[in-house]
Structure formats: structure tokens, C-alpha cells
Length: 347
Image 1 (spheres, rainbow, N blue to C red):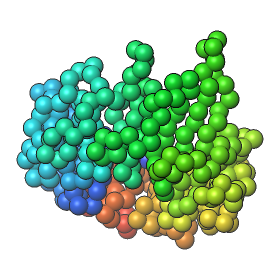
Image 2 (image 1 turned 60 degrees about the vertical axis):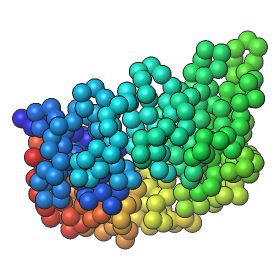
Image 3 (image 1 turned 90 degrees about the vertical axis):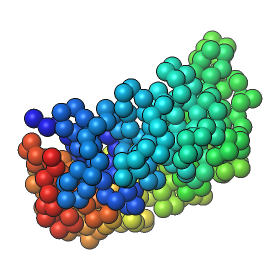
Image 4 (image 1 turned 90 degrees about the horizontal axis):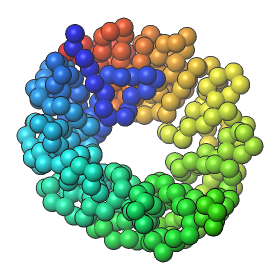
């Protein structure tokens, strides 16, 4: 029996099938696997790139990382190699660069879309650029995964933390111009001190001191914050604008955030008002005006008005992208449009 793959992490609610290539300019290609080989199909479920690859991480910025004969390279939407297979590992492009490992068990660097190494291998693991910067983790005193700061697309440390050797530091990506940095003093007995830090801007300036026990990235000007066992939201000045009261909270997207209340998942607006009452077993962020939700163990889609425009009937489903989503019903994987109509059945 044919086995479908999901490599790009846009799937939701247990989705283990193929996913839409990440960007709208990718000619709407979907991954599909036949007899152990992966290819790409179009929105009519016809193979436009025949099954031939051992692995893929999907399309990003017009190119897909693919593995053949044990090596990774990059193809375009026609299936032509733009960067021939030569890497031990290769991740999707972000801000025009992709994280690659030249040889097994070595450090990671970055290449451009011609395959030229533009940032020399020096990082402990692959990451993605966000807003022109990437978190840099490297090796110090034989230990990998030490936070070094933030590097720009030229490989320059624009926020250099390499001199802070007496601290255990954790970095997050930049989002809405801010990044969360957590710091703990390394004590002489090997233990860690209390967490300090907070949100920094792109100059490295601390603009919001550590706001709570835990917090997330900023999206649409708000970040989820955790305090005394509950989640709420704060603004870019660090002011709590939605009092912590939820069991869980996702990022804001298209003006709404999914939050878990005592009686299920619902959605709130930026002022904390209930926009869609709690009624779902699970809920996700909005993309293109629709969000996957689960009711009675089946997945459907809700719009920004709270209307179930595609009633729950799927076993799992991806987010919509360019008007198409991948859904699973039993053993079958299909492409559906925004009205829930089946476009085709994936091979």
C-alpha cells in the first residue's frame, strides 16, 4: 500500500500525511510517497516531480531540500537540481539562506541559493532566520549548544553574548522585532540561579524585563504569558492586557488567539473578549481565514466569525495554504478547497 509522508510541519491534529509546500509561489506542490520514494504532485494529484527522493523537508522560498543516494541538495518546482546533492543534512531556506551540514557529525553553516557557503560551519544545530537574524548556538570547552548571540545573514554577530561565560542562556527567535532571552547564573556547585532576562530588541537592548514564569513570542503585538498556573497576554510594553485565566493559549493570528478554557477551546480577540465560545476539543491558529478545530474526535474548519464552514468529518487535517488543505479520512489522503470540496485523492 502506498505510504504518504508529512515532512513540513504545517500539519495539525495528528496529521501524518503530505503537506502543502510552505509558500504560495511553490506552484502548490504536495509531497507523496510511493514504494519508498518521495515525489511531488500538483493540486490535481498528478506527479509533476516523479517519486525518486529518499527524504524531503518540503519547499521554502522556491526550493525544496531533498535527499538522494544519502546526500542532500535542493530542487526547484520543476524538479531540477539548483544545488546538487552534496550535504550530510540540509534544512529549508529562510531569508535566502539554508542551514546545512557539510559532513556527518560536524557543525552547521549556511548556504545561499546558489549553494555557496556564506556563513562558515560553526553552529551546534540547524535553525531558521527570522527577521534577518538567527540564534547562534556553538561549542565552548567541549560542550555543544552554548548560546553565543544573534547572527545576521552575513554571519556577523549583531548581538554578541560570547563573553557571558558564567551564564546559562536560552535564546528565542525574533518576532515582531523582539526576542525572548533567558539567563541563569552558573553557580560554583554546578547549579543554576534564578531566571532573569526578558525581551530584547535587535540592538540587544532589554526592553521588557522577565515578565512572568514563562512567556511566548510576540505576534500581532501580543505575547502569551504564564503566571500562577494560567495563561494570559501582554503587549510590547510588558503590560498585561489579558489577565492570565486560561489553561493554555496559542499565538494571535488574524486578530484571534485560540485559548483553552474549563469547558474546551475557543478564541479571544486582542482585548480578551470571547470571539468564538469554547466548544472545541482542540483548536489551532487561523491561516487564510480558516482554522482547523476538533469536535467529537473529528476535524473540521471554523472561520473568523465562528462558523463551521467545513463540518468536522476528517481524522486529521492541515492548515489551509493558497486555498487548499490536506486532509485524512480513513486510510485516504485528499486535497480539499475552502468549501470542503474534494479536489483529488492523493496517490
